[in-house]
Amino acid sequence: KYNVPVRVKNSYNPAAVGTIIQQEKSSQDRLVTAITYKKGVTVLDISSTQMLGAYGFLARVFREFEKHKLSVDVLASSEVSVSLTLDKKQDGTVINHLITDLQDCADITR
Image 1 (tube, rainbow, N blue to C red):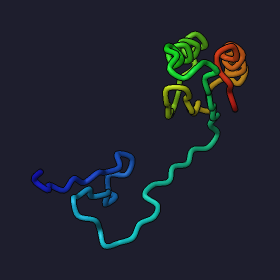
Image 2: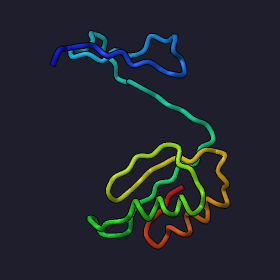
Image 3: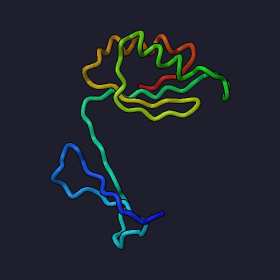
Image 4: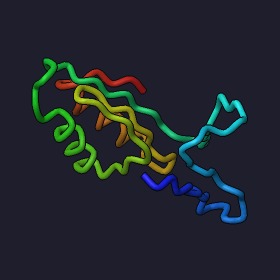
């Protein structure tokens, strides 16, 4: 409404210039806005095998994570699927048990 630019800074690198968000587009053509990379993570893609609109899928998934004491690092979700990363410190055997416990309600790709 008032066209006030906002500067977004990186808390891990406060000396960096950062990014300015403003109403007018920059004259620079920028195809890529961000790239993130982290070594040693486990990626899980978990898709519901239930019908679209069936309730409780995400609740069930995260109950299993709690049961197995697994901590999610990053996630993206929809009504019927969730993709997430687990830090390299997570125990692979425990992750396998999680996958086994979720197989009755989801297809999991590791």
